Image (cartoon, rainbow, N blue to C red; front, side, top):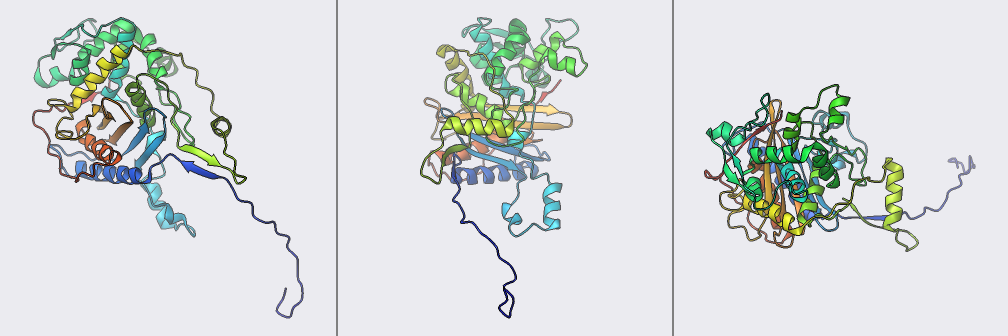
Length: 419
């Protein structure tokens, strides 16, 4: 209608229809703590807050319920403020976000060499196939000499010019003994190793309800062929300690750690708790999964169903408990902590960077959550463990003060070179 009252046109409108309500699994407070702890940890590493200084370039953290697979928190750094898009984002703000690569979700889209936090896969594959036993001790002499043309050294030998000595599987996890896992890798072979790794979801998309998830890469002769390279016996040894072509997302690693903690039971990571429709009904999980598969072009996971001896699981978990106890690589972080934690540190040298990992679960005797932290060029896995500590403290309502953690001179830091 014009100013003089003349009708100039007609518009037919429809009453808006209420949409569905998506309820997420994310715990808002835990998410806040995860983002803050990760950001502070990266800054601490950059500023030399530990014994070494590294130009940490970012990182991520995933917190998962070990029984249900629900994602309780997931953070990627550098991050951005989504409010910048309200009312239209400025060119300057958008360019800054792009320059920092803040839109890249490292937790689901990034793929990183796992290093030592992969070793529990090798341990379980060896135990379940009978290649090793819980009580067998393997003597780490420092240099693995089974092959004439490839004789890798345990990281301990590189640093101290001697081996770890005789270790069982729990001790090998506690001390992250490469030599022990070289021998296990030799005994089981790459096909068996990959069979167990795939069961834990490594090298496969998890099917989480988010776009741009990576499948990662599981080291295998087939991958070598695709790259026009030759698979060798040495590649099997490297794969057994999380090296070779192995490269996975932190979300995949969180799923794997949660499955180890829950006794080897499969879980499917999810961020959708439920969908409430406008008519009062609730979408079934089957409907949600089918919709997600169609939208994201996902296929059903084709992995062999495996069962695990709980005695073997217990031996592996005991090794992880030792990591956070006196003398373990993360012991100073969890000293006097009210919750007993199982964990594993890892430091993987890739090119000029040393990516730092910590993977853990709590409480030890009845696991509820698993936490995986990865910092790009973070130096040592020990450095990232304090992020997990703060998240675990928040989850269990401990409300501890964020005290400064001093590096334990008795705890051994190590870096593994990706070969």
